[in-house]
Structure formats: structure tokens, C-alpha cells
Length: 349
Ligand code: ATP
Image 1 (cartoon, rainbow, N blue to C red):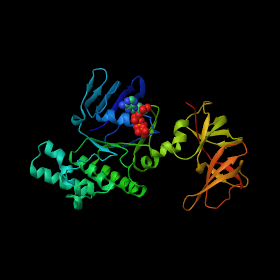
Image 2: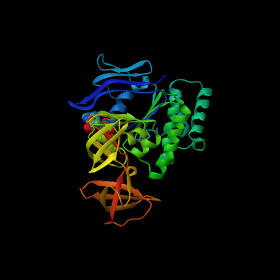
Image 3: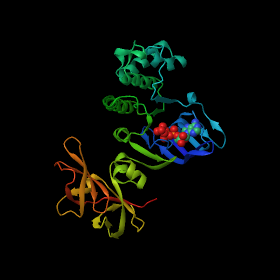
Image 4: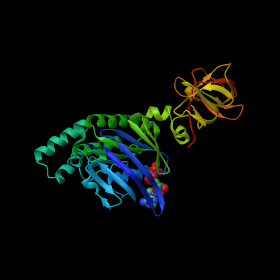
């Protein structure tokens, strides 16, 4: 079992906290994304899991093994953690062929020749690299190099694979293809994967659960769908997906019905809370319907074609900027009626 357990993990660099009190668990075989803005602590968390940094406080376990414990000073080096790494820079050995790059970890661990050939062939086959086995890394494309890095992980049969923005150097089309390669790799190996990215589309496409981080803390750790539909606070609502956070006036719970006054309109809402603490709602494009009799008057400020539909950025009479989607084309300056449909409401934390 390779559950990863973090208990009260903190990291301080020269007195400045980069991670604060992280307590969480990544389940065996999960594909986890660490998502957040630049400087939120994603890479620091990954480096601590890898053993490249020691935590300033707290404890980390993988399976039943303690990896690091700030109290006792224990900190296993990376090579003793049985973890695979995939970096943005590929980190391949430039003077070795593809086959040798992949087989080298087995050579170090003194596997027999027959075993090395068997494991290496299997890893090359499952990453689609058989035809490139004799090439040097310099003769490969970025996507192919990243496949070699994955194949190298595969031969070592790691209990977890840590990936630090592995697609950041690739063009948009190749990124999409490589997302498929990573998810196939995950399905095939069943390894626990922890994937750092600041690209939410990438995280949404691949991860079972996403830890959204800000200022060294995990703000919310949930499935992509839950993060989008039921954000816990303003940061997550604004960071994940498109939407506008607006104040809620007069939240009312009547049996299972939840109502609130939003931008002057009385509407149904959904919330995990049942109290007067509900203070804000997130209006996503799906929560706004264009209709002449709509609750709000709004003026189109920008139109973006999204392939089959248009994204309208509109400004209401009271100055709120709201996004709506439509198949019909509208001109900039057009006046619309907008009806609010059951947005998600939460309390400001
Ligand atoms: P990015 O997406 O830009 O890579 P990140 O979320 O991965 O950002 P980290 O690299 O983990 O962020 O950095 C978190 C904070 O810790 C930042 O404020 C950073 O400046 C600081 N930091 C990271 N490494 C060190 C270090 N070795 N020495 C001092 N400060 C550091």
C-alpha cells in the first residue's frame, strides 16, 4: 500500500513560511494534482515528499514507512523512498540511448541481464517507445523525451510517482496528447501520482482529486467536479473555472429550500451551510440564462467565440461583471436580461 500521509507539515525558508500546517492523505493509486498560483508552495510540497527538502515541522509517511519527521530529525534520502520523479526538464542522461536511460536504474540495482531486458522492453512498449530505443535523447521531441522519463519510472516499479509541471515545455497540441499518455500510465501502473501544475485545465482533465493551494495551505481538496460546483470559499470559487463571486443578502433556509437575495433578485441557491453565515455566491455561466424578462439588466462588454458558442462578458447596472454563454451572437453594447439559476453559495472564510 502506498497511501501518502502528511501530518502538520510545515516548511519555513529563512523565517518565511512556504507551507503551513498541511495535514492530508493521498490514497493508494490516486492521481492527485497540486494546483495553485505561483509561489503557493506546490513545488515545496513535492520536494518534501521526494526527500529533496526536509520539513520544518510535521511528519510524512508513505505506506507504513516513515519518510520524514521534523521532531526526530528523520529524513530518508530520495533514493531510499522508492519514488519516481518526472521533471519539466526531463532529466535524461544525454550520453545514453533511450534504452539505456530506461534500463539504468535496474543496472544500478544489479538485476540480471534477462530481467533488465524484460522490464526495459515492457516499459518501452507501454510508453510507445520501441521504435526509438536506440536513439539518443538529443534526437527526440519534447513529448518523446517525457515518455522516456515515464518509462524510466515504470521499470523501477515505484510506489508513487511525483511529477513537477512535466508538460510546461511542450506546445498546446502535444500537451493534450501527453495528458492521455499520463492517464494511461496511471491506469496501467495503478501508482499513486502527485502532479504539480498551475494549469487548471490540465489538473481537471487528469486528476482524481485536486488540492487547491494558496499561501502555503490547502484551501480545498476535492474532485474536479466538486471544486467547480461546490467551492468552499472565495479563493477556490475564483481560482477554479470562470465565474463571479458576489455578496449574498438575506439567506433563508425553509425546510430543504434555500433562498437568497443576490444583486437585488430573490433566487434559489444551493449551499452546504444552513446558517446566516452564508455571505457570497459564485455565478458561473451555467447559472445565468439570457431572457428578456430576466432578473438583472446587463450590457455586453466583450464577446469571445468559443467554438459552437459565445462567451459574453457583461456588466450589470450595479457594476457587477458577469459571464454568460450563448449560441446566438450578440454585439458589444447590447442590453440583456439575465436570470440567475441556483448558484452555489458559501461563507467567506
Ligand atoms: P511556481 O508555480 O512559481 O513554481 P510554487 O507554488 O511551486 O510556485 P514554491 O516553489 O513551492 O511555489 O515556493 C513557495 C514559496 O517558498 C515561495 O515564496 C518561494 O519564494 C519560497 N521558496 C521556495 N524555495 C525556496 C528556497 N530554497 N529558499 C527560499 N525561499 C524559497
